[in-house]
Amino acid sequence: MAVINTLQAFVQTALALSFIFIAAFSGLEVIPERAKLEYVNEKYFYNLSVNVKRYSRSSSYYFNIEMTTKHVWTNNVTLHLIFNEYLHNEYQSSFIQLHHRFCDIIKYDKFIGTMVKQVGLECPMPAGTLQLMNFTLSLDKFPNVFPFQKCRVDAEVTITATNESMAAMCFYVSFKDTKRT
Ligand SMILES: *[C@@H]1O[C@H](CO)[C@@H](O)[C@H](O)[C@H]1NC(C)=O
Ligand SMILES: *[C@@H]1O[C@H](CO)[C@@H](O)[C@H](O)[C@H]1NC(C)=O
Ligand SMILES: *[C@@H]1O[C@H](CO)[C@@H](O)[C@H](O)[C@H]1NC(C)=O
Ligand SMILES: *[C@@H]1O[C@H](CO)[C@@H](O)[C@H](O)[C@H]1NC(C)=O
Image 1 (tube, rainbow, N blue to C red):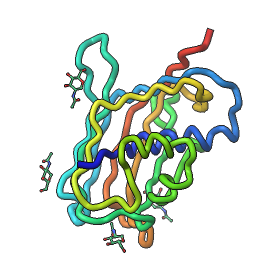
Image 2 (image 1 turned 90 degrees about the vertical axis):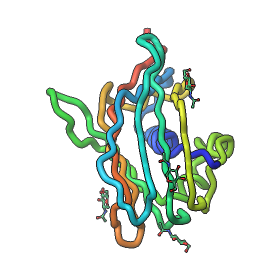
Image 3 (image 1 turned 180 degrees about the horizontal axis):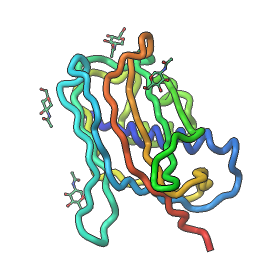
Image 4 (image 1 turned 45 degrees about the horizontal axis):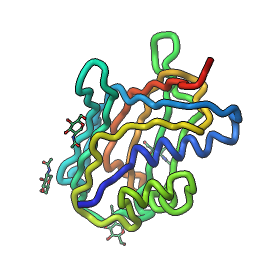
């Protein structure tokens, strides 16, 4: 059974790109507080579930995703990520948006390359069941790239050629700067 770390790829890519505009280094904890599945296209998935669990009041938040895909994924699948900042009691779309083809993320993003290999995510990604369980993110040595503390990340996977939606979900995430004094 392969293991997928799609969200990890998303977030890491966001961080990598964000080097461009923010330079200060610090520790960054990314806390996924809630996940919501908004759409699944049954042409492409047998099933897809996503959730965030906490095992006790003091435990970390764990992110889990499980899916069984019907097709091979190559660059014919594109990932879209839109960060919406929580401001004045509502989520507002921000300038941080990513639209990347699946294999390009895996092959060319040097920040995720090693991690991707560790969990066995590959390109092309064969059809079948993919699981990511108990995933947490703690990013020491990464700059605190997010100009906000709380956001909703809208994530969508589409067919590259037509932009037909395959699945859409959103994550409510907060960022904690672990080294700020
Ligand atoms: C998803 O569907 C696949 C194929 O039908 C099945 O093997 C798998 O057990 C299902 N997973 C869940 C969580 O229902
Ligand atoms: C992507 O392309 C491969 C090979 O051309 C094809 O087998 C697969 O079904 C396509 N994937 C999707 C999601 O359409
Ligand atoms: C996830 O972590 C919790 C708490 O550490 C543990 O009880 C559970 O068995 C783990 N689940 C998986 C699938 O690893
Ligand atoms: C394709 O869909 C994504 C996700 O809904 C959207 O953000 C993007 O703007 C769309 N691209 C085009 C060219 O319509």
